[in-house]
Amino acid sequence: MAADGLPPLREVIAKYDLAARRALGQNFLLDLNLTGKIARAAGDLTTGTTIEIGPGPGGLTRALLSHGARELIAIERDTRCLGALAEIVTAYPGRLSVIEGDALAVDCTKLGTPPRRIVANLPYNIATPLIIKWLEQGPTFASLTVMVQKEVADRLVGRPRSKDYGRLSVLTQFLAKPRRLFDLPPRAFVPPPKVTSTVIEILPLPEPAFPARLSDLQRVTQAAFGQRRKMLRQSLRSLGADVEALVAQADVAPTARAEELSIAQFAALARALEKQRS
Image (cartoon, rainbow, N blue to C red; front, top):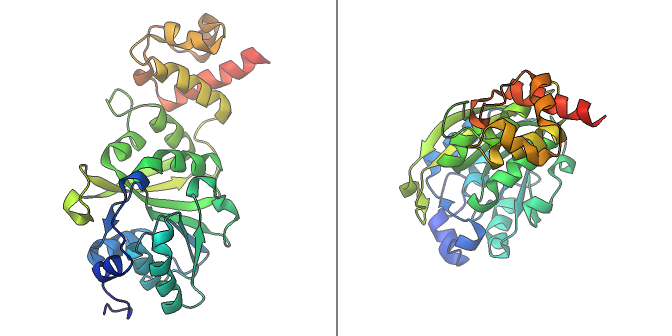
């Protein structure tokens, strides 16, 4: 038995026949030292609500509760895992509730009481859309402490003129402050993935980093990075706007490429697009 009185995770996996499914993006983290490290990285969990996505057999779930999570809500779409999670519910009465469903379809802004925070080993196949969805909901969450593929983390914190800098970098840093915390090697998981994983902290900003409408920024970045090797005077044509006037108003060189622009410059283009439309 572990310190929480629950059986070891390998026994839980065997008991409920929880072989990880690639279609669900599952890679289970069984090392209690690492799940504890993630829980500690999430900070004080004794107030508000902690939300976990894809708990699987409950390794991180147990660490979060052991770390003092006052109210933990876990969202799991794999019905095979519900029995294992029910055992944790019993071991921590009144502190854990489980929602069976797809995290992409669940409105996490309505769960529990604030401050709300996300702490999760995100399924690889839905990590990016989940992060964008949460950030688009404004400063609803106090923090996101999530594990993603290292290449996704690289893009989240990407800087201009780097190979990792792209649309995800701009949208994330327009709405939040991302910070890489630590990497986890493939051997830490069952089964081992083919890539390194990274735990990253994302702190949503009270207001966007620069004045601009998010919808306009999304359109501009989609156009610019959709043809990232082309100059802006070419790539921005898909906006259906007067590109020459657009870049002039934003004070951006028409010969620049998307990867060369700062987030402030993308915001300036978004404002110019809005003004041109009005």
